[in-house]
Length: 190
Image (cartoon, rainbow, N blue to C red; front, top):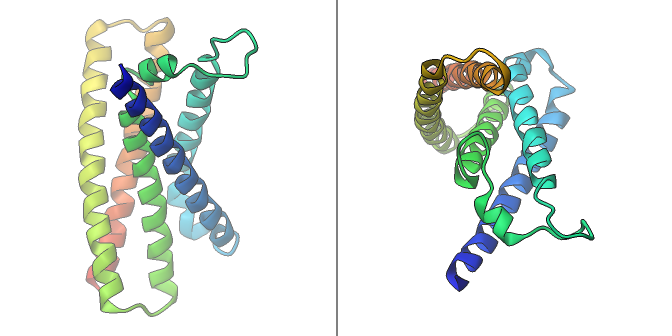
């Protein structure tokens, strides 16, 4: 029991760190996007999905309040916390994918405007390849979730909402893969 409690605390700390890192990348994007909105138009759907996921998860967290004073959250609730059929690890992976995608788009924009060393290009090439691998894995999970929803065959209520959200997430992930391919192509020709 003690180990699981420590594990939950660690998971919360890591998740918080992930969110702080995502917030920093979004702040960097906000600064750069002001100068060149057209360069980042392809990020519209991924950014909307990222925001929607964060908002939905915020609502889930707020529902975890189990104490009468409403100020403290239970670690037991955190341990059981689910998001769209997955756990915190799945959510962290999804948000990490969005963070990587934003970083790749920022890097791609930088490469188009400034000279960078071959070493930096190699690092970004590796980052793009890792992101593509993670995105493909995420896409496989989405396809499995879609299959499950379609097999249930319900087009009403919660299943309909889940189906629409899952299809939107698939489209967003495919867009992220296209952005990775564009940046990878640019790096190859640099």
